[in-house]
Image (cartoon, rainbow, N blue to C red; front, side, top):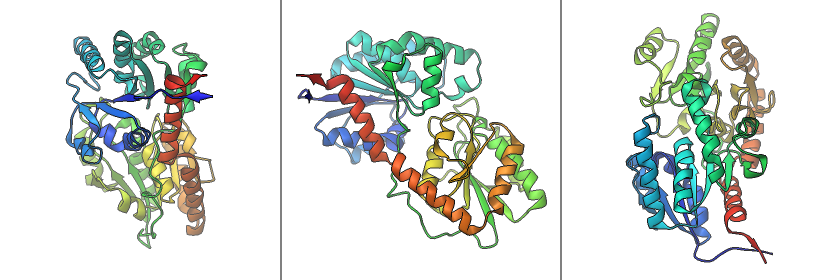
Length: 382
């Protein structure tokens, strides 16, 4: 029968404390509840207040993590910084999240002789744009992937891509659906949408790779013939990302009256509740968190038929899938959704809620990741 060693210690490494606060708290709680000593290594930012909820978690700042930079000297310093941390903490296993921790943390864990698990949360700008950066990243993953005991992918497409590219093999990898959402927190509310308007809302960082330009272009086409449909945008400019929206272009969209821009909102509940449909025409995702949050709140969704996104939608059941980068396809889907009766949209929302609860609840995801860690790094046969 399987047994688990005593004196369990685990480290979570990611590129920001924001990531810990938004995506990893349920996993932290799972390990703490199971008697683990938990440490976090991440650059300290305003979200360090998560420590108030988990005072037993030790947090170590990460000085040399440059999330989107390509300075090799800084990346070498990052490796040495992680080696020092791993040797000082001496954990049983390190779980790395996001690309740079996956790559450079794998090297550091191998040198420090610590078991490692990588979690690919999405392939991001470099892979989407198929340029020099993408080639470098795939080469680095191919060289360092072998240092992980297991690599977890947030969607099946990314896993199959890595297998096809001979970066990993099937046995050393597994797919688990994202990081999960709190389906009790994101639950249906009384419909607050304006009676005489149909509202389609984009929620996400203002990146071209998220399909914001296609969303605005579709809005421009539709509002010419149907001013009764409104298009809302919620999100912030990500200045560190090369795909971020040009500020002048954002101003033009607002001035033109194509969209209503809410800016960045920490609480998106009211906006989702007032929306009739949430739209994310992204080029590629790990798993689109805002789409799952909308599904959990009983809203129909429109997203792209691409990696990560397609796993959230049963086309025609809880929403629609559209062609990546196709304004025409997006226009057709929005028109189709707007022509549905309110009862039909409500039924689609109910189906989405069922899917969110059964497949994407945060506790289900945390349990699955925990099980992979135990089976991979702790379990032995006696």
